[in-house]
Structures are given as structure tokens and as C-alpha cells.
Length: 72
Image (cartoon, rainbow, N blue to C red; front, side):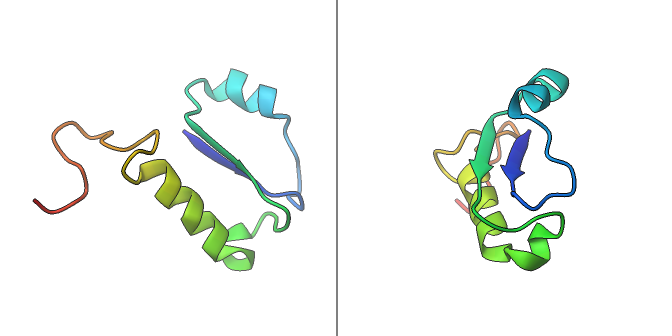
């Protein structure tokens, strides 16, 4: 599970709650602006988070056994 925190979200849940309720949080990122519509408001930042999480060296890289997401 990866979580991106945007300060203008309608409801801000404490990070400790997210970790306790969800459990396996492997990626977290804090942002200076944006909110509930982050994909529209801050798309570059959200895509950057996904790249950091799933990219080479990221905490979710290789989550599918035998597949890296990159061509041989």
C-alpha cells in the first residue's frame, strides 16, 4: 500500500491511523498542495509517487514474482 498525503484533502487521517488500519504501508509521501482531486490538481506529483513506489529500487518494485515491468 502506498499513501500520498495532500493537505487540502476533505478529511485528513493521521498517518498512524493509516498504518494501523491498512497494515502494510510501504510508501508514503507528503505534498505541499493539492487535495481530494490530486490526480487533477497535482498530476505530476502523483505520477512521481507511483514511479518512486513501483520503479526500480522502490518498495513495491517486483511485487509480481518473475515480472519487473521492464522488457528483457
